[in-house]
Length: 341
Image (cartoon, rainbow, N blue to C red):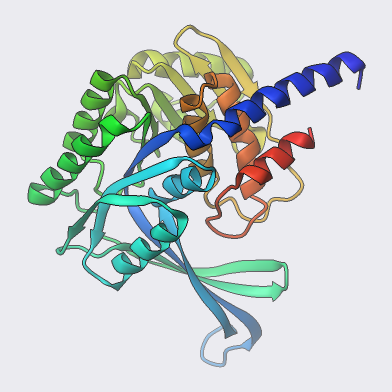
């Protein structure tokens, strides 16, 4: 590597360090489908005589905030002030989720209890083959996808109206589980625009619902489905992003491309493809998308432009896929990854 390239990297890393150092002054509201992720870990010992399945001897069990809770935990873990708005049930899982969120320092005054539905819970059964090798063998989801309505929907909108003006940015985290109704999304968009807040969404494919959002994120299959055509070449991505920006009236579009990194385009037709930073140590991709939207929004609220924010988010995703489960990111890990460049 030439001295000129080394100098450019040092300048870039110094700029990123400045952005990371400002995370503590940023406040982000996350609105979305709240999920409790539970993991039961066991050691495989034999094949069951009852069915052709492995018998796991119980080792440990733990829980993590997942779904729309995950970006809020990442914001808090990186030093930002994170508020969370969403719906939980009046059950043990709901109480456990609130406890876990408090452990991350997430502000939960925006949580609404709906006694008619369970707290969304995803229970994973995991075989620990070696001390460092874990393999998920089954998952059981407790979920009600019925859209919220009535008093629950009105109470959630009231909570958003109270919290949003205090924040620098808003993230909508869509897991298609009934929280982000047209009324919730519409009021969030209206208020964020009026208050001049950064407004981002991890759309999970429901792109039309988030028309008029500032930053819209989706993955490649979701973009291809919306465009009704495959995206293969860089020209395909440029053209596709341009179409989506126009149709969604967005300021910026981001497509995550799995092992190929991310592609970003702004309304001014500026385009950038950012290659993946970690291809050799991928243990679990759970939570990578949540890391991208959380870090991207946090970085922009801390003063980064969309392209530098996307680069930071790409580094962050490269870190969390090295971890097992729905992991969060810490500032020292991010700085260490930047130092390795």
